[in-house]
Length: 62
Ligand code: SF4
Image 1 (cartoon, helix red, strand yellow):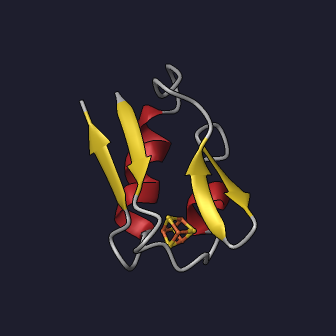
Image 2: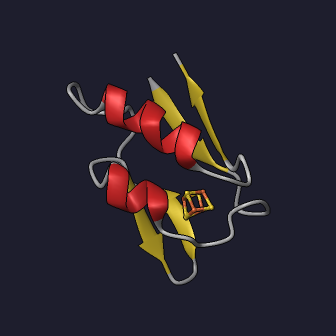
């Protein structure tokens, strides 16, 4: 599984990094993916982060 953050859409709320720090971290006022592919065991939390992202900036590819 791979996760992506659309930097144009990200509003920097920090939710993804809180829900799934294994994959997302804040860099300045934007979130970035720091683990590709998504580590085993973090996949469910990664999907939760995708759902929690209000502006729909996160996409996940199986
Ligand atoms: S949850 Fe979405 S909007 Fe919030 S920091 Fe993460 S990618 Fe950006």
